[in-house]
Image 1 (cartoon, one colour):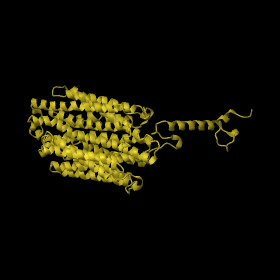
Image 2 (cartoon, one colour):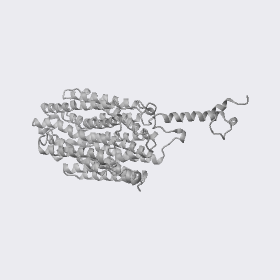
Image 3 (tube, helix red, strand yellow):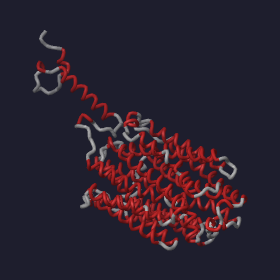
Image 4 (cartoon, one colour):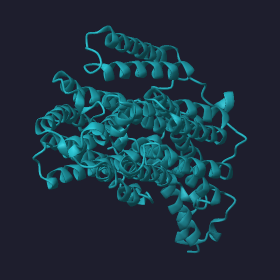
Length: 553
């Protein structure tokens, strides 16, 4: 009769007498043990195990790093969109076709995608501090070259250098968040970075429209110096500039050949595509040569990354299964559609609706501004942590809105009422907000999944590569969309002998005096563009059906 029922909670530790077991302590140990086993048995691997230590709270250092990366990412986004309303100003200043001035944006995005790859590898080798500082310095140098350029080739070269620095800023910032922030808070801090990116895009679009009418295009680059100065001021206080990378022992080797093949291949392909049908005929050697050279480089890249690369830049581990591949393909298509909307919808407002540049820049806020409240919703990340099945459905709903907006863009002409095109712009902005929210959460959850049978170091490397590869592919999608869109729009206009539509047209003719037949011609060219891009958006929506939630559903 002397044995209490509490002996049922007795552990296997023989040094503890059974008649001295505390009931509350035993029950708590049992519950903790089973709760821990349950947490480890689920796939919610991005949650911290609170039983192993006190909850993590960010300190001054973490907030300094977040502030630093946010300022620099905002600079990169500002440089991306500030030139879009200024395209007619570039055509006026340099007396060049508008399809040639589109290289001001294309060159920046080519450099941006290349810079993300290059500086991310350097950061793993030498440490993020000195590499982030070098990226900011290079972006500042490119900005200075753009500000002092006296010709379109000089401006394109400066934008390429500026884009390499901006890409380095983005790539290294993603690595810093992945390396220094615990996984339970990684979604929250990556949201801060993406929120700064959206703010930069909004500010750049509005500022570019104002600069077009009230100043000169040079102020688009002068104002970028503000972000450069703030970033360079904060970096020494936020990061260790002495450099403590993985080196050759634990880090990845530099895939110089893969990075070079990617740059040469994509650059040649984009040059051939952008010249086709406008400057040269499609069957001319000036078009066939760069397209053929670019295709050969890309084929060699695939063979090299598959067969010979020791540490491939495009690791097969990132695309290990169908959901992983579709996640990255969806990011590429998202970047493609967003870039097409950002560059082509303003052209509709300028040439068809005859709106001035400031209002055109302000209308671009409808395409990006809704992403700010969407990202604020998930700033804590707890809403999606408790409902891990939601992010794929958010991305799918975003594609539904994007498909609807792209399809309805076919209706954009000179007779559509203002409420109609405003509704289309807002729907496109809602789709962008849902896609950036859904894919941001999905890629973070995907990167934090466990890889059974692999060491923690290898798992961390694969996780970082997955997040970085998603960003690179999304940037390449934005880059490729510009020359393809320019070719689709300007080829039929050139065939109809209407060069005045894009060779310094804004300089010689006020927008209000655009003849109705030329407005209709421009609207018809844009309608052809949106018909094709509706199909591409539909492919993106199909890819989102293969996304899976954190629970594996």
